[in-house]
Image 1: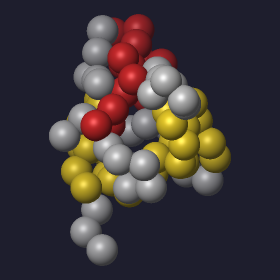
Image 2: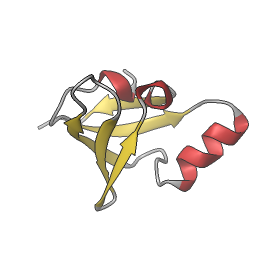
Image 3: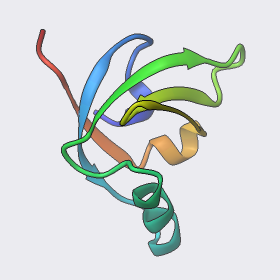
Image 4: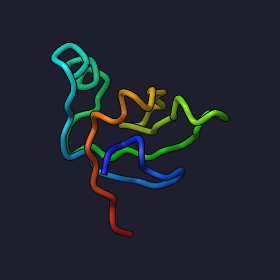
Amino acid sequence: MTLDMLPLGQEAVITAVGGENSLRCHLLDMGLIPRTVVRVEKVAPLGDPIELRVRGYSLSLRKEDARNITVEVSKP
C-alpha cells in the first residue's frame, strides 16, 4: 500500500521510498525513511494535502508525493 491510500488515523511503517532522485532525497531529508512509523492526522477538505505525524512532528505532504512511499499497516 502507498502512503496516499492510508486512511485517516491509521498508523503504518514505511517500507520503501521511491521517486526521482531529487524527490527521493527530499522525502528522506524530511524523515520519511524506511522503518519509520507514520500516522495520518488530517486530510484537507479536497483530499490534498495530507498531514502526517512523523518522528514527533507534523508534516504536510501532497498526495502525489505520498504515492512514492510504500507502507505496511501496523498491527494493533
